[in-house]
Length: 278
Image (cartoon, rainbow, N blue to C red; front, top):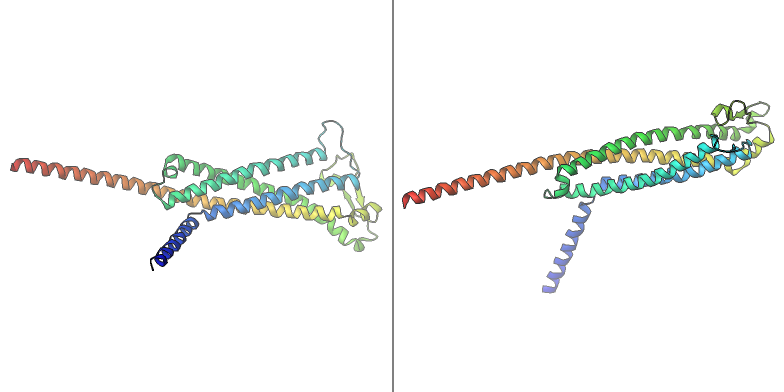
């Protein structure tokens, strides 16, 4: 009988411990972090491969040659974009970890008002600073999403022309890189419908793969924007909760101080009455 009671108490203790652990997790920050990592990974991976596919298309079908030296051409710009992708991947990995750690600390302070770190002014300032960074990066990812939509639109037009190649027979439609700013005005790099290069480009896997990779990169940038919105909502809620917790802690301190003063006054008067009676 005693063994059964001990076993039931042990199971109850494990259940309460699990409920406490699950309840103390910052689910909003955790979901936003997972969404941010998924979006950044999708954007960086697919964007990098899509840029490599763009280089192959430019070299194989448009016969664009890399300029010698340090000349700023389309290939140099693509290399710069790849380095930017590397920086985004590393930077937002660290930023996601910081926001997740902040969520854990804030959740602990909300659950237990005696938490010292987040209730302090330093903790509230850190939350406000992360809120500012999250809003700034939200604007950055909005710009990245808008910028990524441009190659998606360009490749969609090319992909549509290839899919409807039977409908454009007899017409003279050309893809001129000068319209996209990929080459200078003096260079004439274009591929026209009905030519052998056009059909080879349409039949190759490079065009289809590059187009869908850019679409995936755009979806990743959109996921990162949604993750930043989640972080902003979580940080704003944490800021409000921490502010209320700080006020409550000040109120408790003042109340405790007043009760101590009343107790001291009462104790002093009792002593005076006792002395007067004696």
